[in-house]
Image 1 (tube, rainbow, N blue to C red):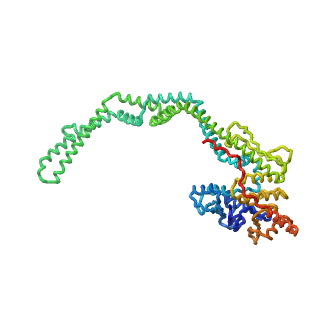
Image 2: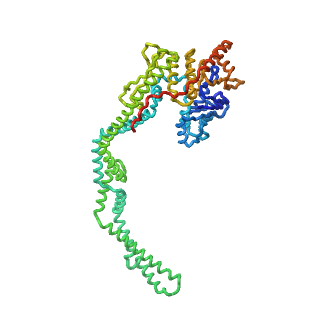
Image 3: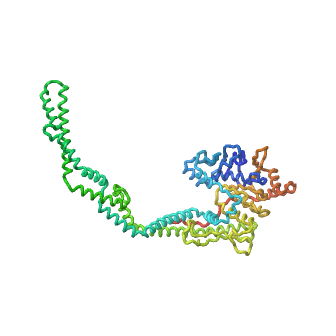
Length: 578
């Protein structure tokens, strides 16, 4: 339960520290005093949207923190803390800070955490019902979520959504393959023709470049031959003046001085001998080159034909000749893929059928459990309506098959809340209830019924608007009953509700010069009587109002708190296979 709430520099709140006791706590005060502001701060602490505009004028940041007792039922919370390596204890410290740049930081037990982790933790601890929440009761989405929450069907509903997403993905893939198959035959004929042309060409990587280099050599054969022949003659073949013969003479001339003892001169002959070997090797390489040029006089024509075929096919595909081998590989792969497309389509259609069957089975189970939960919820809410000033009223949850033939991520049911507020009148959709007060009371009945399964701390912000008199006292008792099972914080203008509280806090707006702040004061004894009398009376608080306030407190205290009970559950259901 929520033990302490600290708020600094939030809106007009400079600094407020609230300590809460077990049971039901009410916050009262004049209209505009800032009661709902405390709820807003708690909602932001729990991960609600917040910007720099919430920071008190002149402050650098808004700082909201709370201490929550985890309790014995905090298994899910402890698992969450363990998953994120957050130290756990019997209490959890929650803190959120919003800076002037609009950015916020969050902490759990002093450890910085992402905002989503803080939200996940607070969802297990705090359940806030806003003062206009009754308006959401007319929305089909809210109605479906309430039924699923009451019947503890969230897990099964999540499985239905996952099954729907899987079916939708497979359907999308199937439609793409079917669209591609519509022009498959024409595409196949074209691909086969293109691949056959490239197969016939049998071009290998690097061949085009090599052929171009060879063509250049062949075209310049006469020039190359003359130059190479002259080089060979100068290096080796001329007996009188070739480089090889001249080196041979030089080596022979130096041979007699081998035993002269002159070390510097003796180092020269080996160098000349090595040069002679290099000249001979170079001449042999040039001679082989001449043989290759002269080997096939028809080679030039063959090269030209091959290059022409390559360039023509490249122009046909509008690419460079060097890119033809890569295109050949790609077209072969495309052809193989299209050949396999028929098999893939059969497989995909089979998978779609299986996914749809799996979805339909889960949706059928969800529908059956929703029907059970709807009957139980209808019965409980109808019973509470009798206590909330709607005698003879009847609450019915109607499940009808969805009209759309396409599977829905939420199952096959349309959930509609219907209500009859007077005996003998048929139930109508809650959206058609004319009275806002009746809708508010119905919403409270639904919230009280469903909230027993909710978080340990339940916050109600003026959800009792639109009611009064004896009904207001009954509403107060309902909230007090909830407080006995957990913790209830309630912002109210009704003395009948405030009198039922275990703890009473008064919120006051204080103006000092140009500054405005709020103060929160715990009320006991005479102070509480005075506040209830103010809520009962007008401008002037009379002795009769004070006596009435005391009587209300005595009457509330005379009724013992009920033994805490957990909510009645919808009948147990088997977990779906898988």
